[in-house]
Structure formats: structure tokens, C-alpha cells
Length: 343
Image (cartoon, rainbow, N blue to C red; front, side):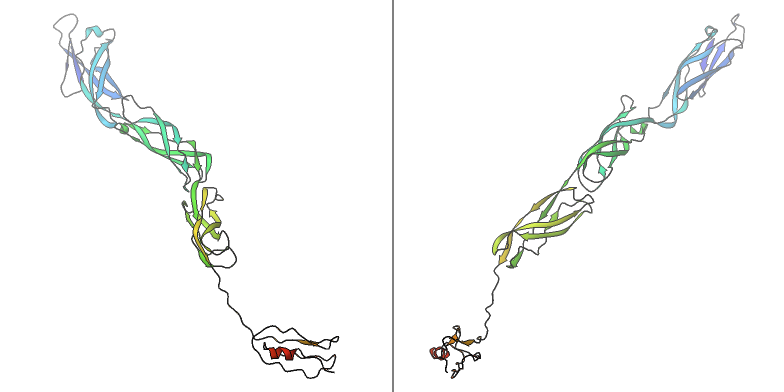
């Protein structure tokens, strides 16, 4: 028996002579090659009725290992098996067919989330992770994992939810990543907030109040500080005086706990002396009273500026009421003011 492959076809032809003599005409049988689910299958066509013979061990090879559809598969090899296989001879089968390679699915596990300083967002940085299912020798890794804290506020052991991710590397196109999801934990620590007193100058007013407003640095996102006030360390006149932050409210949605606050004093404050004005008034009247025991007029007139000369009292009856008079500072005025009473 002779077997020959017809060029340009997928059939391997067998030629079999009758086992009892050379004068029997040749009979053609064929091997039809096809592929299913990555396997190369072959069927023998034209086997003599009643003979038990089949084809096994065909080999196939894609042009390359990469994912694709309708890819050429080169077929080779093959052996005959069965009770009557010894009555046939197979020229090694060769030819081609087509098949597809679909992406392998990978899993990602073992993530870790990084701790961070408060930034007013829920974003988390995720690292690590192990890909399962990569074929030995392939270059593939993953990146772009997304992490999200349950809320933005400071805390320890906070849950981080993981999602997303993309494959990278030379062989990344031959794989698909199952959803990289899961959770881990990480911490959010407080951010530093600086509140700095501003310089201020004023005239002495007896208290420590200051009109300047402290400056703020280190706020995150839409957080704000309100109610900012400052005071002098003491009310006294001087230069290079210390100003202290005296009031503030942090509006961060967490009672201010998302920040570690540092208060910074200012040492350039000034309090200048207050100016006093001298106030002058016209002389005050002097009250004279008659003493019933001495019959003397009592005069307690102060030393005031030269004024209107006092009118002498010529006669005063005991018990009479003395009208006020103005007295100057001259000796004569004083003498006339201290007059004896007359009967």
C-alpha cells in the first residue's frame, strides 16, 4: 500500500493493493484534517469496508502563541491504529487548518493600601497584589488599581475598597484580568495647620485687644477657619510686644480633629502712649460761714488765680446767712475776707 499527500488539499490519500495479488487496481482513501477547541482531529476516508483502522496522534502548531481569531494551524504527524492498521501505510500527514486563541483569565489578590496624611479626599493608594494564572515565561503585570477610604476623616484601621486595575507587559494582550476587587485597611493621620498672629499697633487703651487677624496655612480641600482673633500679652506701652492667637474655629466636618494645630506668636506689636489734655475751669465761689462761737467769718478759699476782688462784709448779724463771694490771691483780698463779725 502507498500513501501520498495531494498538494493544495487537506486530504491524505492511501493506495491499497489486494492482499492476495498484485493485479488488483489501486484504491484511494483520505484523511480529512480539522480542529476543534484547540485539538487537531483527523478522519480517514475510503477505508475498505470491514477493516478496523483509524488515525491518531496528529500534531498542530499555531503560527505564534498570541491571542487571535482565524489563526493558521499547521498539521503534521499522525499514526494508524486498529486491527487492520498493519494492512495500511500512512505517509506522515501534513496540511493546515484555522483556529482561535482566546485570552486567559488572571486573578489578582494580596493588595495593600498605603497610609496617608489627611487631604480632605477619600482617595487611597493601593500597591502590591499577586497575579494568578500567568503562564511560565510570559511577561505580564498589573497597575492602576484604585482604592477608596470609607470617608475622608482621620482614623486608624480604616477600610479601603479596591477596584479597577489594568494589565501591562509584553504578553498583557494574551490575558484578561478578572475584576480586581476586595478591601484592606490603612490609616489617615492629621495634617499640620499653622495659625500665625499678625503684627498690630495701637495707642494705649488699658486692655490687650488687637484689631489684626491671624494668618492660616495648611488647610486642605474646602476646609476653612473662622472666628480668628488675637490679643497682646499685656496692655502696657512698649515695642516688640508679643501678640497671641486667642480664638479660631476649624470647619472640617470633624470638629477640627483632622488637623494638628500649631499657634505661632508675633513679636513685633506696638502700643504707644496715650495723650492727656489739660482741662482749665473758671474760679469756684468761696463759701463763707459765720461762726456763732467766735463771731468770725470762716474762709477756706483755695489759692486760685488772681480774681475779682472780694467785697468786704460790713455788718453781719449773728445767725445771718452769708452769700458766696469770689476771693483772689492778693494779701489784701485775703485780709478783707477774714473780717470780724459786727454786732
